[in-house]
Amino acid sequence: MRVRFTDDFPYTPADNHRVLIEYRKGHELTVKREAGEAAVAAGKAVEVKAPARKSDDAEA
Image (cartoon, rainbow, N blue to C red; front, side):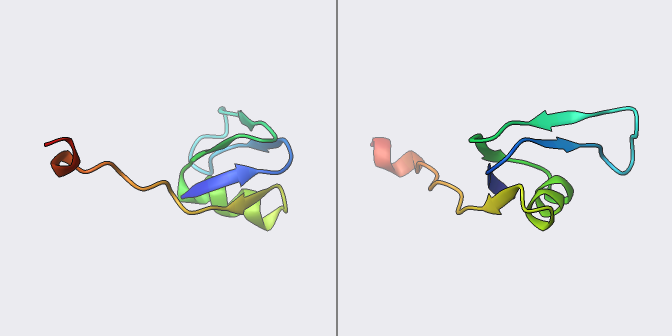
């Protein structure tokens, strides 16, 4: 899931409560779906379309 963070978002995975990941405002990146959905639900991120991948044929 690709998201752009609109505010800082601290995230702790459900399967490992000893981990804390701090996502920063303005960053756009691919995150685990659980993290992305939690950030969007909290109003701290918006889902964005992933950039197009380069094709191997394009280099030929």
